[in-house]
Picture 1 (tube, rainbow, N blue to C red):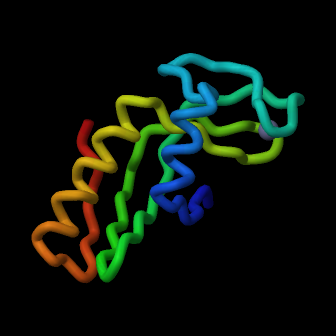
Picture 2 (picture 1 turned 180 degrees about the vertical axis):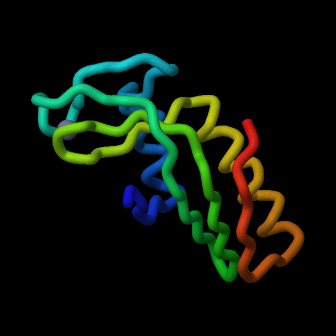
Length: 99
Ligand SMILES: [Zn+2]
């Protein structure tokens, strides 16, 4: 249900914008209408030839527009794993996210 592609630069943008907050419900910065609720999403990261699919990533999801917010901590872990996969020359990897 909730899944979309997030490019590395999007993750960086989320981090930079300060929108990302840890583990509590907040007002959605996109529609400014909904509240976020805790949930799990699928995140796809692509870099060069590597595609990584992370399942079961904890996120805050807007109940109104469906915008997803990842915490800074989760972002860091995703990017770390992505760097590692690129280094290993992975083409496609499906991972269950473990915090
Ligand atoms: Zn929203």
